[in-house]
Image 1: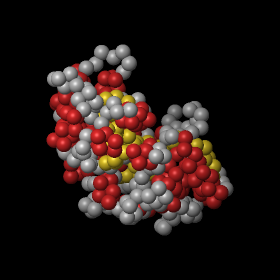
Image 2 (image 1 turned 180 degrees about the horizontal axis):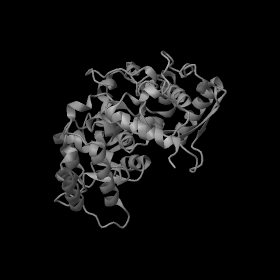
Image 3 (image 1 turned 180 degrees about the vertical axis):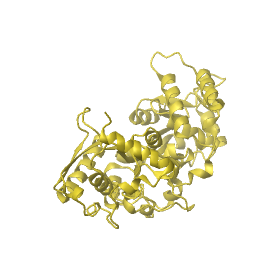
Image 4 (image 1 turned 135 degrees about the vertical axis):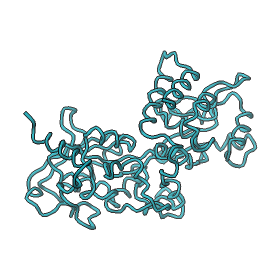
Length: 405
């Protein structure tokens, strides 16, 4: 017996290839509804009760903020309810996922396209400085959108002000030659502490110092993980958490630390101790910017309610609150208007816009696609696994073999 929901999913996937847009069968979004209150169209479905189940894999503070925004939305829609992070056996209508997972979910037939009933970034999306949509590389597949940008948490590079001063340096290294000089002054320190659980930090570090395409050169990762010929520390050292990475920096065990922006922003007093380079978050392209989006699962029964809720969670007001309280950067390029960043800034500096919203198609072939990133991540986890027998040589060999396949 074929269930009605399965028929709908099968039909949508068929239409993607040879028929009219699948979104023609879904509710259309109302214009100019940044808070989601006017999202649903005037249909009988919108008047029926709906209960959405939403999965948000984030830190406690971010989840609490989403819950608060969701409560405000429910006050405007008394017939619609939302459960955030319910029991695992509950169904999922909406999920917050890393951008690099969206297309794989879509290609597996698990998602509904969002064109037509949810505008990216709550209707506020605008092209980047290049004139191209900055999220198309990650979220667009077969001419359809499969995720709604919800924010970014880019990697940043932190340097100890004290160590820079002790080394007679007025500013952090700006190129590989300067970094090598700094490292030679402290041969027993790692050049950077990076996450042992997320390979994106290492890849972004390689691309930042060696240029686009460095992450696709196994010999560079091999060199970064190997001790120097003189027995000094390797360029990269593992850190289990952002807190560990910063601790290694503060204890003088590494020259720098690669951590997510949201972690750095929430640490009181840390900004006075370090010099910060945001550019590493753009050096590795989309995966280093660490974007995340809301996706709608293909078996949801409540598309009108889901569209309204996602629009509310990605509205300008919501992105402002997520930036102020959650530390994450907005996915709406138009919000990058501040002259400088202060503790109470409602918007991030305009100078960051160009860094954060590049046209990924310009770097096609030089940066990793989601499939390649997933493979490197598995190799990276195996390399740092407790009791593992991996080596830098083996990691480079396995990585090179996959890239050539």
